[in-house]
Amino acid sequence: MSHTPHMVDISQKPPVHREATAAGRIRLRRETIERIKRGEVEKGDPLQIATVAAIMAVKNTPQIVPLCHPIPIHAVKVDYEIGETWIEARVTVKTKAETGVEMEALTGVTAALLAIWDVVKKYEKDEGGQYPYTKIDNIKVIRKEKHGPTTN
Image 1 (cartoon, helix red, strand yellow):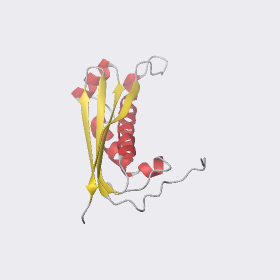
Image 2 (cartoon, rainbow, N blue to C red):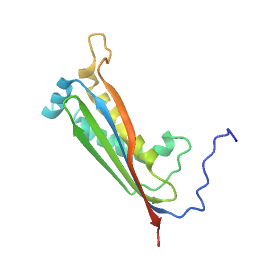
Image 3 (tube, rainbow, N blue to C red):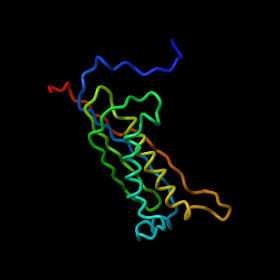
Image 4 (cartoon, rainbow, N blue to C red):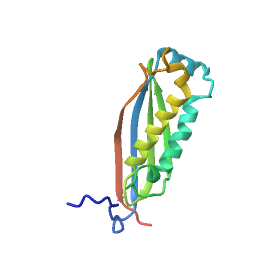
């Protein structure tokens, strides 16, 4: 088995409809969640900023994940669920390509959660400038689809 990094040859695979949804959560202080709900975050709306970050990350996944193929991105949908002490981001990516979009969905979720952290970090720090409560976790692919060869 070779240990030399290489991209998998997908040149013989037909392009088909592929879709993947990934999700993850950021845990925040209850006060930070309330501030977000009231629209009182100094840097702007964290979810709007996170949505742009997710879309940009999806489109740039091959620059972030070294062996990921550049593929056309046909749609990106970003949704959020807000709990009392957490925000869950869900990113769904669609394409017609020779390979899947799981890495793109995972990269989008990660970027969204990092963007939220960046926008609210001022409110999450303790007296020593640390983040004892804030954390990102449960990033995973929750669904993927692949539909037969395209006819056009």
